[in-house]
Image (cartoon, rainbow, N blue to C red; front, side, top):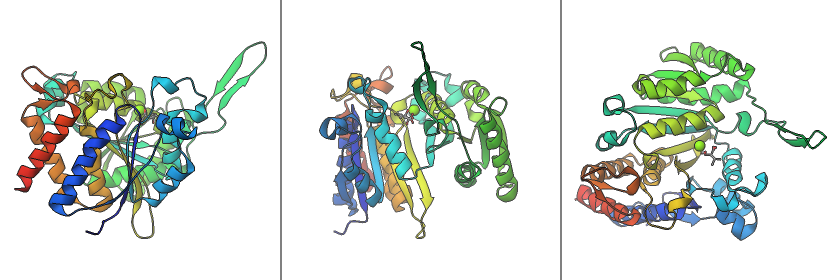
Length: 370
Ligand code: IPM
Ligand code: MG
């Protein structure tokens, strides 16, 4: 069987390796049942890489990521590494790979599965059928802006600095992704910033407006301050279709939106770069949830966010709509059949482990495939 492409698996820390093991189960199923095979590589990132190499991302792993057609990541971080200096922290590995792969657009869907509407912290009628896409800028803004650092200013006092900075080009390229994606949805984009207090936010609003007028006037564009958006997300979340926002606001608003869906453990994400001459984009897929060190190694974690990230990888990096759809349908059926990992457990349902959830998915896939 010839492989259709190369995938780099980066399980990372905490529950990362456990949930990635369930993806391997699906990879095996795809190969044996559908003849879809990949060249697989595996590497270390985050605390796991720090333990092995003294750095959260080695140059070798970085090179492997650049050479792969797609990267699938588990999660990074944990209390064990919280006291390390910034350049050694697990999170730095993630930031480096995003930056060096040029992954400027982070797509974070917040989708409510019918079977889970009851598990949301909001009333079911507010979230039933919810389907929002947050497009978060990922390689700029205050995460990377200069100057930054902590300096001594005498008399035992210090000063901490980070810089929020955006250019026209950075704003246009991420807004373009949001407008394009909205055309396959409800054609509504809400651009979010704090243009009432931040110059970079005002530039954001102006540049999004200019691009919209020039190229995307068929899409409905609205603007919202980030604090209001945080409030509207819990008040009336279904008012949104696509939200486009900067790196920091996107980090926070996507956690908030994720919680609306009933579980952070359900949500996939994709981070994409610019198109190359052949029309391919570099891409990294990862669950929205973190490394959950408190439950790591206990076979308790919900593997579905990583599995749904893998479905996104099949769809966007390899055009495998059929296989992506099969996996998503299997997830719906397993949930519909009442299986729940601890994080989405509801009265009257069957609580299952990470691996039992993975096995159940494969059984559903077998049924779907006949
Ligand atoms: C996320 C995470 C990361 C971020 C951390 C782990 C660096 O919170 O992907 O949302 O802040 O971007
Ligand atoms: Mg976050």
